[in-house]
Amino acid sequence: MVLTVVNVVGTSKVAFCICKILFANSEFEPGFVVSRDIRRANWFVKNLRCGLPTTYEELSELSGIVFVAVPDAVIERVFSKIKPRMTGRVCVFHFSGFLSSSIFDVDDLDWGRGSIHPNMSFSDIDVALKSMERCFFGIEGNDYGMTVARKIVNSISEKFIELDESSKTAYHLAAVIASNFVTGLSHLAERLYSEYKIDRFRDIIPQLIRQTAENISKVGSVKALTGPVSRGDWNVVEKEGQIFKQNFTEYSQLYDVMIDILREMVYESNRKENKRNGGF
Image (cartoon, rainbow, N blue to C red; front, top):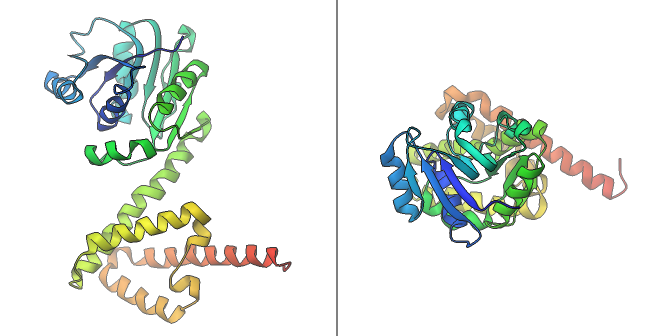
């Protein structure tokens, strides 16, 4: 039996977007939306246009699918609070990319457990909803949890990878590097454009990132590398390094570290090319 009633504990943007998609699918039904603050639960239900808002104190029992949609630091605490109220067949999930589902102590109860992590940004709900069908998920859990997780992600995008518990931390770090680090570097680019009175940088930067992402998708990061390091323009690298360090004295070592990474990528690309051509 695959569960279909979905309850949400917490009112995160991730949970809202996932539920919005799932409840447009007739295979899933809304259950409770639980929050410490009934106003947040009411907002969630009002904008979702379905579900039953309630608080932890008023909640009587939970069954079916349960999304624990709270910050990583309190997932275990919240779960221990609602666990005594769970009854019947239950499958509990969180959305953390860092934590595994083993933090849900349910195996002795024959319940399903899992983690469903969407590899995308939820800073803007409208943008996120438009992107959900292209979202790539990382899922992990026990046998029954994985069965339900596959049904959930297949109802959203049909794009997912199955993870082992031991790989969750490395998996999440890779996502942070690919997403958050890029956002941080974009912030430095914005500061530089602004300092030198260069307009429309909010058009320029996203276009560069989109084109780079497309190239990486087609040929991988090593072959997608362009710019002065890939061309061996070391005079340009040196002069731009001076500008970087003048403007970002607090991050002066960052430029050298990034150049070393790019140099290693060029070396790897050349090595592979030589190997294909029969060289050493």
